[in-house]
Image (cartoon, rainbow over all chains, first blue to last red; front, side, top):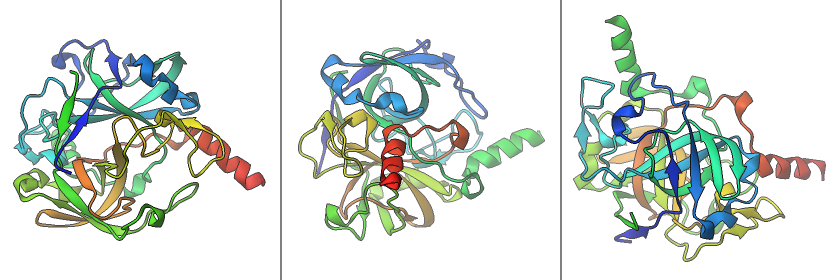
Length: 152
Length: 152
């Protein structure tokens, strides 16, 4: 497989029209509500989605025009690899957000926890199923950056 | 955005050569080890990934040739929408797996928890950062299918 062409299955309605409005960095909370509007031709694929509390949304960093393998994220003063960060400047500009499903209205899902810009294309929606136990989770340079900030 | 073309950043080495070998359905455990081999030109993007215990792997259902908006998964006898399931027959055939990072060896990541076939193309790797609290998580038709199976 050399390449794969993807098409949006829908678009996001969000209160954010510019990247600067999206909360970022250490401890950023994403509590804003938004709507995942699934295109009518894919709406049948939402059957039984109401039973899940949380969803994965795979979406496109559609404003991102190039990638950068190593960069300094807004939440740290040190550079990190793109695969060890959530940088939008990725070789394949796919983003992943976990949202809470509030309600389904036809082909629209009202959700909480959006961090996407208004009009962002959606590639896929999946049920969020499982947790990694807290005591097994290590958060790498992010935990270190948080600790440094707390000390300063 | 009408379409987006993606290219693999690497490939998976897995003990599974056929889909029938991958544990599936209710309560399936994914404890097999495998290797994420990142192409040399993207290896710089792995900087600092060693500090994370778990990773998201975005990969391609490359054997999937068409999509099905509603289908009956192997773990249930009832049909569900594709966006409420992990079916490989998705409009955009992107899969998502959380793996545990065991070790990095140059451009290769040894991981536990693979459920991909050997040779599967990888689109992206991201650090796994956050949990949804257990008491807030609802698992929809999957919980119902499990309950039905326990009763029978």
